[in-house]
Image (cartoon, rainbow, N blue to C red):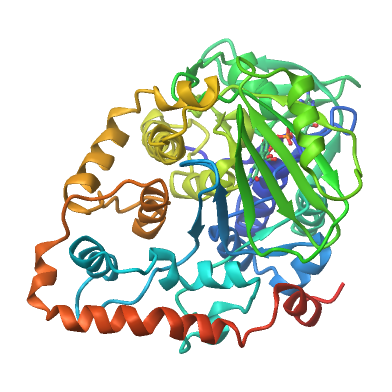
Length: 499
Ligand code: FAD
């Protein structure tokens, strides 16, 4: 069977240019010709600004110098997310990147801490032992790998980025790797009568763009995967109530915090993402409970700093395509599905999709077996993220507004209920080998949302309790004292990545 000769990417938002950068870098000179079609007239969504640690791995895999990237995109560092008012008004918790505590003897730190909590109500907080949480709380930053033998070696980090600057950066990168960019509006998509494969795009100018494999990065328009192939959509709005967001950019005020803030609101939640040169703000809400105008008013009343843009309302539908890859079309980014940005997972799903495509790279026939396996794995990723996001809502104690009463009444997907029950019964986590969110993430949110296990892992009883108590008593203050010696996030940015 003949190898792919040409891959066409439709769309030049974050998804399109991440795809182009990855394909250009890894396939350059080896295989297919790559062409990206985008339209400046249509523009991009431009709001994806908070990332998670695999984004750093992406930069490294592309051979991009992190410091150079941070300077060019005005990025700041992110150690995790501060959740405010989710369990109850006035309560907050932190979801850190990286590990929490080190093993005590041979035992998992979490189980030791849990034993101390359940048996003698030890006064420590789980996050006292997470280097990323302590750094975030104190507004300090240092690259953890530069301090591997110190107490913060277990921390991890990601970036807050300016989506527009990222797309520009990756465009330069991809074009230097031989990706051809074509400016134009796609007005028609022609399919082959014999098998329904997409054959070519017709642009407004009449120009035609042919290809063997098409990557649909056309955003919510889903030009190929939905408008042309009509694959259908799993609608998850029964478990995730928000369906709109309003976003606005403001001038910076005060220190640049090394974390994203996700603060619960009466009818959804509000994000705050600090970059070096400005701050991104948004209110993600449910249109059943609040109007666009009211949500905008609430957002504007809470932002600190002068407005730099007009508020932009973005409607969305939570869910995923029935088939993310169909025939010779692979959908990536918003074209493939969307889950509200509470854990900043959408850009991650873009490079995950292309990594997965490398694994199941088809020939020109796009063998259905490859597409089926690809779809199974990508859908599992979407479902895992959906469950993690639903967890933030379904165990809330809030009943103070109609939105929160509705959120609390959600019946979670069975896969999530099983996870929560396992944790409640035993403090144990379901171990998924290929999952994005590892135990410390689930533990942080479950603990932060007040879900308490009934018991701890009995294996911990093999160790004298005194060892656990002493470790807990000493480790938290030692970590806090060490973090106090680190530069502030702004100092680190100035020194490490001067503008
Ligand atoms: P778009 O940016 O919409 O790009 C679509 C492209 O297709 C454009 O270039 C457009 O010109 C082109 N196009 C469309 N139709 C045509 C046509 N007919 N002819 C030619 N070109 C066409 N993700 C995160 O990881 N972290 C976050 O914090 C985050 N926050 C978000 C907040 C909100 C409110 C929303 C809605 C999303 C957020 N996301 C976040 C998701 C993130 O914005 C997207 O995953 C990312 O920007 C990718 O978008 P995209 O490239 O798929 O679509």
